Length: 259
Image (cartoon, rainbow, N blue to C red; front, side):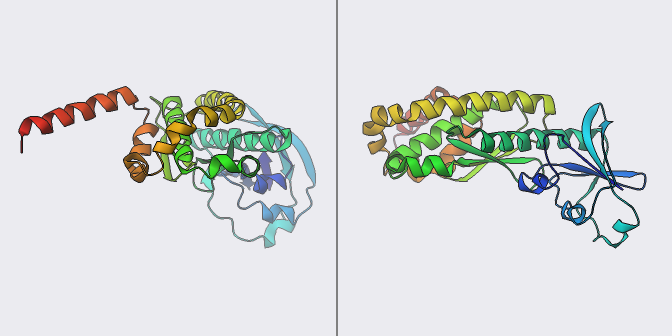
């Protein structure tokens, strides 16, 4: 029996970062997208450690004595390894590597990235360290709404034209379903997101000073009260000018009815 995973990780880190692995039992290879079964292997001692290629992707391989593994708990949530499931493996792995690097870098960041345990989903939220160090920003209801809109719009523009579903049920928390894109595209998006994340850290204090007056007007605004309608539109990458034009047409149409 063997387990395969990215060389950048140690076995115990797979669960920590919800990184993927491939499990081989007999001749059958299966993908465990978030290594939820890896605890089984942590109770065993590998008899061999090598590097092997799967679909032209070099992975670390740990081999275990099959007689020792006979008492393991039943494996759950495994998907048979094929080109489609391996593409998902690579996407989840890209996110896991990003999470590990962001943790070890020590650099300030605005948005935190995490692998969800649900399919090929990534979760974005405000970094706790940034939140603690900038209490004045996040205690301002209007500015939080503006930030929410800025990030939703950025994500919408970043993912525009891509089959990526973005959900946000609460301010400054976003879930992105990446299951329908390629690993190559995920890598390109990860690079662009990293650039945005670094840039906004440098800009946000100045943004607060410049936009504080405007933000005050959004404290109890109609848009803020109907966030559940506004943010999904922005997450779709809709241009605000187009939205304004349509609202203007709607207003003119209603006025024209003279009811």
